[in-house]
Image 1 (cartoon, rainbow, N blue to C red):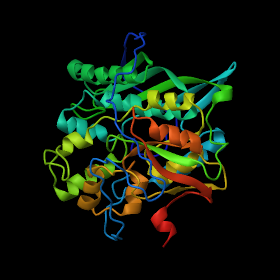
Image 2: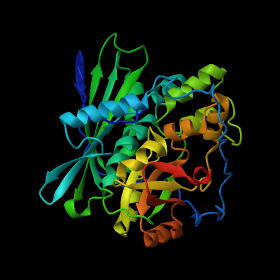
Image 3: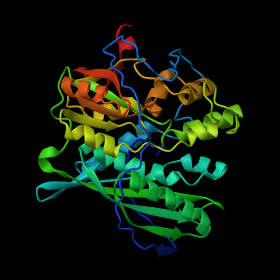
Image 4: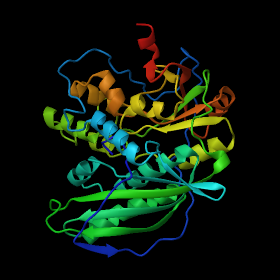
Length: 390
């Protein structure tokens, strides 16, 4: 979603609701395509085959568009989480853990934010459900949890059955990719509440992990390495800023994306990658100490969430290919680099903090692409290696 904090405290009121029958069959992951190479960069080594790495400018742009200008105040969201944590201790992780025998149930909830606005404008509704599933299952897998089931909430002023079917098809596809059951959902028809042809979505995922296998970051130490798994693009965060850039510059979604063979529509509507099977496979081989899903807040706010006090992340700038869409957003919107880093995933959708042996193993696995993007240091927060030398 656009806001960086997923609170898990929601109330819904509606005029009429239409229960859908449950889906119980589990499916195996459908392939996202085999990625053929791995980065072995230790500090200044080359990326190898990078499909066109693009470096973002770090120049100061005092009049550039910010996420707050676009209507999203990350600091306000963080403050709300802080206040809620006083009332409900334990809030703030990527997923909530509930004890069940020798295991924990891990739950997460999210939506897809204002990416929906682009779905309405482009008419692309078939993949928005994949985004919805991804945002929740990617969160709960950061604890090492295997997703069990997913529930959705679809709300609209007037139910267009054909459109809703397209959305639900995407949700089914997302559940197949994450090997979890679509257990059911809620359809709320609320006349006069939404604009004609528009709808809103929420998703809820529950997984399970053994208590002695929970990944919570407490064993992270100086010298551990940081591995990044590539994103497909903007995923489902930062779209309020994207839309502000489009609006302010008068850009058409049909125009070609510079440095690529696709249009802005294709780049922006690319569905969020579901990392569940890849991450669980990596976890099964050992050495994984912490995992961060890079959503709203980017590296800046998400990586520190899994670090023990007194430790920080040194990120190797230019150690992975930044996708052309991020270069375009920065240039078209005159967006500062630090604002880009705190708003978007910048081409890395999932971060794993692992020991060095696990890092080597992940990078040598040619089934998936991965990058050595940093290391754990004393300190706090996230710094970039070019910043450390300034």
